[in-house]
Image (cartoon, rainbow, N blue to C red; front, side):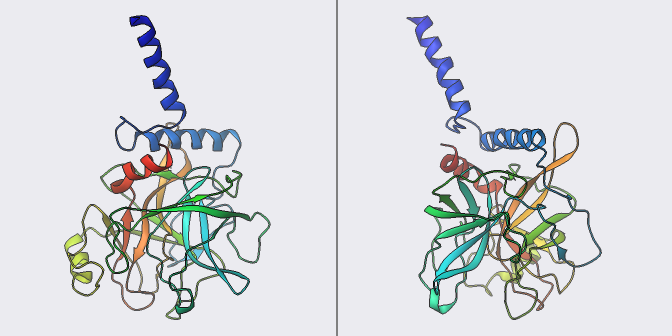
Amino acid sequence: MKGVNLLIGVLCFYLNISNGNSQGRSPGSTANEMCKRYTENAKKNNICPASLSTPSNSPRSLAGKGEFPHMVEIGYSHNNGYMWLASGFVISKNFVLTIAYVPKPQELKGAAPVIIRAGVTDHNDLANEQLRNIESIIVHPQYNPPILRYNDIALIKVKEDFKFNKFVSPVCLYTSDKLPGGNVIHSGWGATDRSGKRQTHMLKVFNHFDDNFAKCNSTYYHLLPGVPQGLHKNEMICVARNNIDDCQGDSGSPLQVYRKDSSNTNCMYDVVGISAFGFGCGWTKDPQVFTSVSYFIKWIEDNVWP
């Protein structure tokens, strides 16, 4: 009987590993295991993100085709078509991670997103586009709309799995509670002027973390109704703008760093934060605020790899 129980225990252990089961495992371990698989697959099939970026003196620049294959756009039904209002990023074969709060025009107030578009860098080049209908949206249970901006994170499950290739692939999630050093890359189709109009070609901006969290907090405390208690340090990340013209990406766009593997080469990104809010483009050099991925890593794992 003891032998049978031992065998059952071993089988359960391996079944949990193969299914990505995070139950009973430390926060971040499942995400790291999945990242390892993603990296191995990318190298095996020669689909590491193209032209991994190097910092530029320019405030912003165009993203290369296939440079951020995890990026997606989130669409809302509008006039027999779609209005792309937010971004997200692929973290598994059927899940996208994004923000819970998405600013919408008056005609779409109360509307829910219906479709995901992956594989597109330039709206004028849809050759590698993958459209996926949304099956369900999982908003963090402690998110309190429409005013408060705490726990601002959501998962979107698509009905049909993504087909991974050089232009559509999952990204790794940053799991440490300590911020990485060096430059961070913010990518998205965000506005570049005060008009608020989204770009048709994905942009990338190199920035750095704002070490003065107290100052960042004072910038938004009492000025933004959504954070009446001030910024929550572990939950929110402040990122400095290098230039007044460095514009924030659209809601849900990722803040990422390079993830070096055991061979010390860059093949994958680690997403550290998700674009949440800021004072807009061209107004001030005040920092932007991102939702921390590592702070919510257990919630993500429990829903994506249960």
